[in-house]
Image 1 (cartoon, rainbow, N blue to C red):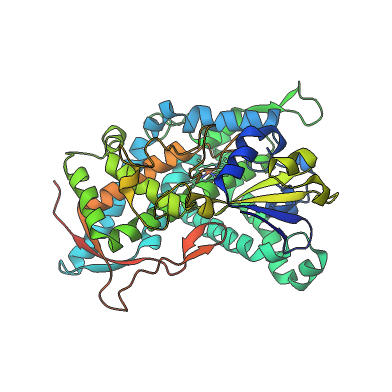
Image 2 (cartoon, rainbow, N blue to C red):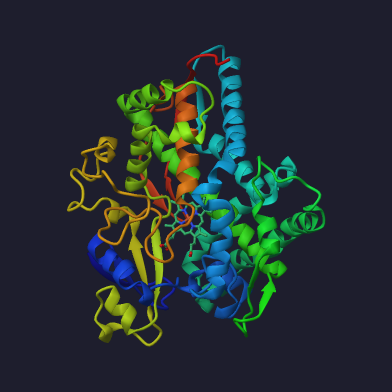
Length: 459
Ligand code: HEM
């Protein structure tokens, strides 16, 4: 339940929490004691060599006025439920282009089923949508591809960097990888700054993208944050901060959503009866898969919730345990806390599979989230009473993007199930391997390959 082990870089002990009751006590009852992430773990902070107070995106900024200003900016204009509708044109466009692409592949194959690597087709559809949420609809395909490649390389480098974070000796040993890692920030700046400057220059002339959606970069250009030395004085964001916040948005969104879509489709491939139930619900709806229509699909919601319970796309939630109050919050005797503090790792996969919360916790059974089921009333982010799962975290630093992300995931799955049949590939072994790999994201060790067959032509 409560495991203690030392971090691989030998720096701070890790307190691993797998019990939802301890997680609730730590993150809800003792929210004040645990409201920051361990900064020395963030490769971005390592690369920039910044001091703590200069950390510069929402994930890494310490809890306080600057965090509040940045988080409110993202929430108010993009993630707030009242704004989600503005995202609809971009989402429908991305779904249409994914469906058209898959349909063309099926037709070229003469109506036979086509084998697709699901992660690849999803990445190709989701990333451009998120990039346009950031930079506006005018950003060209070449730039979008370059950003996607860079972010993918970054995720790979971060996964590789884990074993040498913080340790000087290890850094020397892995100096090649380290240098490559150092180069990322420069490459991000080279790629993003021309786009930021173009928006700086032209944004007043350009209509908002996606039917009223103001690109994230425009919001960031307008925001004023408390100054580092004087909270009462406000200043615009620096170029460095802009690059970091945009990278965070591009990194947080597509990877998590594609992971969730891939896991969900894997279960639909393995359990055709679940796929049929989703299809029945989706087929009952005529016309575009608007947000309003998708919201009414309760079985689809249950399927996505069940997928998030079993395979939370972010495997571990991190908190800095700086002092005795923090140690007490995670149920750790203060006497075992070394002067340099500790890190708390909340294992989201194990918390979602707790046998005291769920019957047959390892079984994929969406019905548990329907009315009368044991998961009825469980939300994306837990309330103060109880934690049964927390794929979007909990407490002050919980993910602000859950509403948007699950709307994207549900809509894409609905579109793909409406147009195509999904089955295991008959050739090449034919199996679906549900083995997980925990890196930056929780992904399928063997990327899902599925046999896709066109169901019907839509007018
Ligand atoms: C399925 C998709 C997603 C999952 C599973 C996910 C999960 C998470 C988790 C577990 C955390 C840590 C929460 C904590 O420490 O308590 C987090 C933080 C965060 N997420 Fe997400 N996320 C998703 C999508 C998104 C999207 C689409 C955005 C932005 C548009 C986003 C923005 C953020 C930000 C800014 C934070 C840091 C919040 C803070 O420190 O105040 N996420 N996310």
